[in-house]
View 1: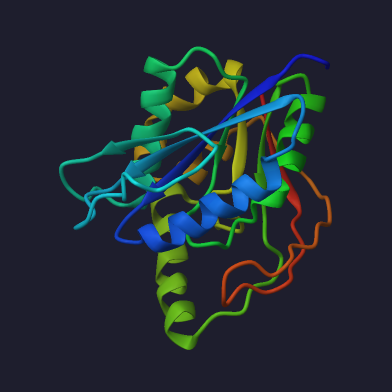
View 2 (view 1 turned 180 degrees about the vertical axis):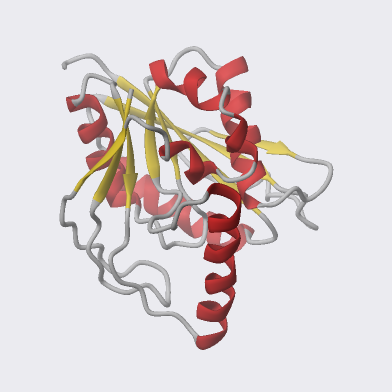
Length: 219
């Protein structure tokens, strides 16, 4: 396709504007000369103690939607998707990613390409095959995965990093389980997996090289 692809990056943030600023710089580096793609960023401020620095300079448009209280990572994503569906019209894809640097901006282009090649009929989820974290993180993540299983009946094996085509966004926001867990929307009878091996370069401190298979949610 030759027409310009408008991509909205949806990023929930809670008390970590420093990491968000670094992420924005990395996105800017990746897309400062990207013909055929237009990037904007929607940050959902999930009740952070501090506001985002309005003096922050970026060539990429940034919109910050501030919530009055902390609702949690997953509901912040759900609110962002609802906001985009209700308020935005000029976009082709929504890319959901975390602000902590685990989701590499260099792979946004590949996620969008996979989504575009499906003619917008699939939601693409990226999955980290390996990650190295502290013992405390692993313990917390174990209980996180357990709570996901209790809520959805499914085992969690991938993150929030994903690409949603515009024509499927309304379908996503109408799913009741979106408010429990964003990734739960991929578990419907029409979902299946396709695996691609990607190697993510080291980004922020603590990131490790990893393979990124792809989960596809069929329309």
